[in-house]
Image 1 (cartoon, rainbow, N blue to C red):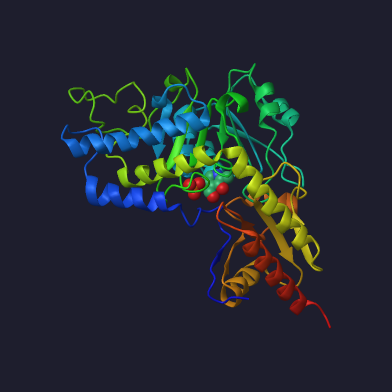
Image 2: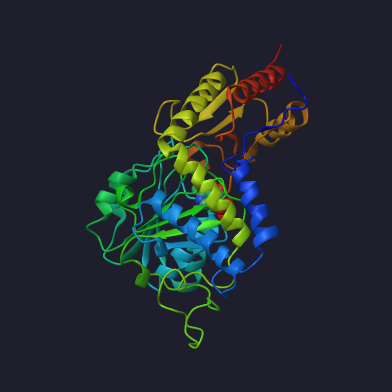
Length: 391
Ligand SMILES: Cc1ncc(COP(=O)(O)O)c(C=O)c1O
């Protein structure tokens, strides 16, 4: 086993490495362009605006949004979720969500529960991490304003039945917010197919952009239902002291992260050129290899859907005789394999999996992981597991 090879299996947290075109785009935006976007009219400022516009247009293309102005850039997936959650709910409203959710959904909702008397119903998932569409429908009330569901669990990889959930929520006036942090770039995420009114995602995971980028995509007619969280300069309507009503300025304020968005534009181009279906297929093959390899090891318990089920390339497991943190440390120190351990910022699902509070070991694949990476990971877990078994 090569000691020098770095095997990065934490792509659900952020993808690494990035395509060379992403590094080049960030460098160029910083070294050569260097100007703000949308504020000045000299040539470099125009180029900065074009870089941002190309990220917006590519994201609109990927999410099936007709007007690129309905793509709002955010700091990360958490920020995009906060804009959507805090911007749509008011005192006395009711929200339906699930036990699969990440803390970037659970915590804003808890805050609104305590500060604004928002009521929250959390639908429990099953042991694979799937949420029932019927349970979501049954939780709806006349005062429900928002349904927030992850497109896929960042713990088990289960892809939620959003087409069915969306069908059942559609007749209700509540908005459907999809957290696509774990699916954008890996699984098709068109707003119309998901029946989503709002879709929030990171720019730095499957979309291959740099850290510090996130996206909120809005369906037609939703903009007036999302209040801004932040107010300030937009480079437009500067004579007015009110935040502009038009998108993206209504929800996107202050100087934009031009280097980050230039990198995101390059990442999106790679995703669009390769095609999400092709990426999904490649990741599906590697995920099957990983699940089947781990399953065959005595003492390993995999949590979540079967290797070929509706799942992403996120695989959580435990190794008998070890705390997940010990496994992660051994993988890093002895094998150069980087994984995450613990609750993965999604505490509630672990109560269903019976993995609370220690959590799981999580391996998450990206487009640059090859067969050899997966083989090395399986062999390392086999050795670690064997060392714990009584002789
Ligand atoms: C399901 C899910 N939602 C939201 C987030 C938050 O995204 P970000 O790290 O970009 O803030 C994550 C990140 O891991 C996630 O897995």
